[in-house]
Amino acid sequence: MASALRDGLAASVQKIRDRQSARQQEILRLEDIQRQLGTFGNLGEIVEARSRYSYLSIQTGSIRRTLLDSLEGELQEIPNVAIQIGVQDTQVLVLLITMKRDEAVVDRILDKFGWTEVHLPQELSGKKDQVERELVQKLRSAREEQEQLQSQVETLIRERHEQLVALWRNL
Image (cartoon, helix red, strand yellow):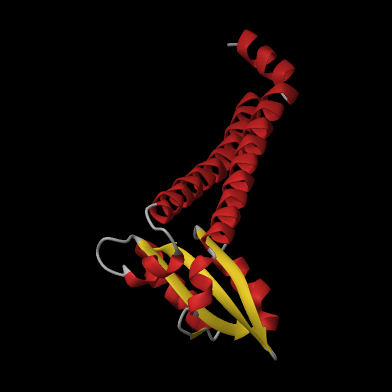
């Protein structure tokens, strides 16, 4: 009984810790995107700086509107900013910002959904404020989830407090 309680609790806590670790990695990457974005005046500058000096990958492309939610779901594990910037018939135009180090994974996902690359329209180079707001919202959401996970660990321990005390006394 004691080892089952201990093992079950340890497994539950480990699952939560693993999720916390994944969220922390996401937060670090989003903060990295935020820092990189801050070094440029507008999105046009970032696109022009697609050199070794920029760690951001900015892509604009179109995808079937019906696939957009699925694409965003697939990209959820990769820190990104995806903003719908236009609609044409059954297609939606999307601005996608990721870290260059994730480019191979992102490209596979985009290929899977039939992403067609298009050039960044000039009028979008001023959309940096919208991108920054989206990024702040994603960071806030990741941090809130991180706090909820911490609270789950505390609740788990609190719920089993009496059992854990009894287990300790029997040692």
